[in-house]
Length: 206
Image 1 (tube, helix red, strand yellow):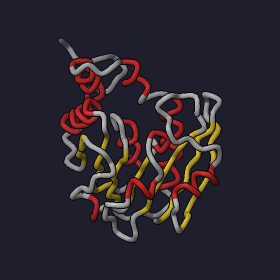
Image 2 (tube, one colour):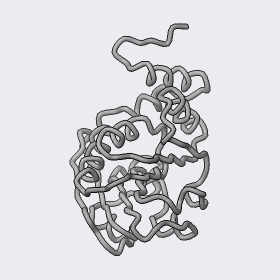
Image 3 (cartoon, helix red, strand yellow):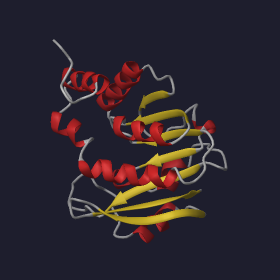
Image 4 (cartoon, helix red, strand yellow):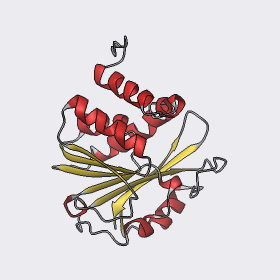
């Protein structure tokens, strides 16, 4: 079958076919490229790009298929590594397909719990969690992990309490700050999303 789809880059099209082959729900895959996903991740990357990060070694907590945020990070930061960790095995398979298609050796993915220590932890200088509403608070996530003291944590959550698997939403940016227990805050803010809800972000050091 010809994997070329008009208007879609070939490496992304290959990931679509891979997702279909392994049984990823198409609505789920398409959602990872939605307008709100683009808004929230562009916001995060725009803020990070102003922080004069020399060489970005990034770990994604619950990075999902990871294609959109990876592309934005590489376009805007001097990226040395992106390591995506997700409980969804199929999502990681799609991310690894993207790595294969782009032949970008900076990318790596792990199927597993973000709380589990990983050999890459010690070298990371940015940890990104745009899925905080799906997980326990940051102190619980990193209590057994060893990150450098200069590792920057960038967290996003939202007020979409009505979604069943959103177990840890917040009502304000200050609530996200309080839950994160970061001891130095470099940025906090709120973004009004196209879907009518709010997304909150905090960036700082643990």
